[in-house]
Image 1 (cartoon, rainbow, N blue to C red):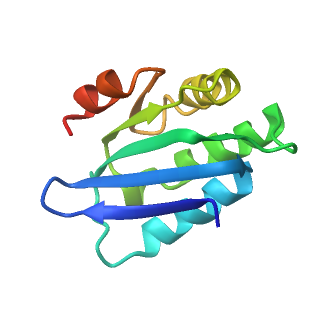
Image 2: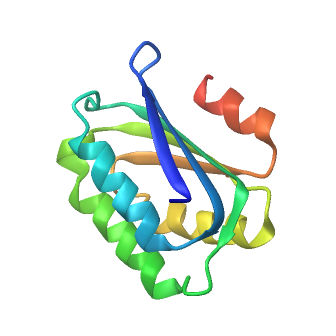
Amino acid sequence: MPVNHKINKEIKTIFVRADGNVEIEELLDDERKILKNPEFEKGYNKYVDFSGAIPGPNASFDKIIIAADFIQSTQDIRGKSKWSIYAPDQDAYAFSILFARLARDSGVETKVFMNEYQAKKWIGV
């Protein structure tokens, strides 16, 4: 599976890595796993690394809307947090910016970066 995550309880951060052609459904499946993970706690920040990924052939605006709606629907479980998305690929960057704008009322403050250092610095890792 091209999407996986690791939870670091010490720094209260979830690290997500995506590789290859990544579909929105795969990202949502991983998000559901995170929310069910016993190590997950409300308010954890997230660092998403898309450096090895490109949007899959089925990526679309409609699917980004579905993803943003899902994030908004799980706001009570997730709590307020920061998500830093590192997306050096132009297409991944564009989809990530769109997601960040659509999910802005979900309790998640999201910023998207094409520079890894800036992405990590903003989230504090």
